[in-house]
Length: 290
Image (cartoon, rainbow, N blue to C red; front, side):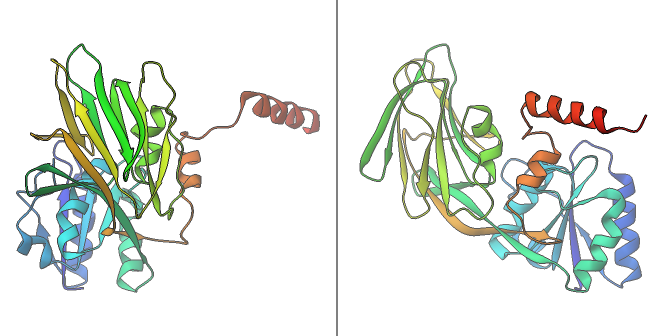
């Protein structure tokens, strides 16, 4: 490595991690570049800023890492997610472990975690991407009508709050909250989950990676919003063809690859049945020394 870029959380104080990163790069004779002007909504950045870096460190949390991933995607620059607090789905190391993590990267003890993205057209001849999810959500008081097709096959015509299309990574976020399944890391598929559907029957559907999902919207008088990774994107379209782009961005992985399930359990997003926990507690109490 010769040059390391850094993207910082826009409001959180991350001084300790930044000081640690500055000390480490200085000790290794590397240049540290602050990637300023990065658009937190899309990750848009001057290409030469990121392209000149061998690594981008994103300090703050999952939102900051998403910004860095979008900015680094065109040049395939790997991104190291640094958590300032608890580890998230995209953060690889916590702030106290940053120097040790950088040492492992410098010695080649890391693996590239390739992340897919959802691709659709927001405006004519303009494509936009989401690493977690794409959401069509009603804006006013009326229900949003969305016709969902997988390729040329009609799946369902939905009336409700909207619809979420999610990658395997994003399956544990908004989609899961709306009742969708969890796709383990590495699954070559994506999913579509209705939000508060009013009547009918349309459970979440898992779509192979080589198929498209087509969303045709009747916005009613209230209108709707297109959200990508939690940010609203202006769009004049009412028909969205959503596909999965493999290997869109690269996240630094340390340790052995897994399904992503251990992290979800650690963060409390997956939990055991209370009956099982009560049984374990009773067994522990019975077996405890007196």
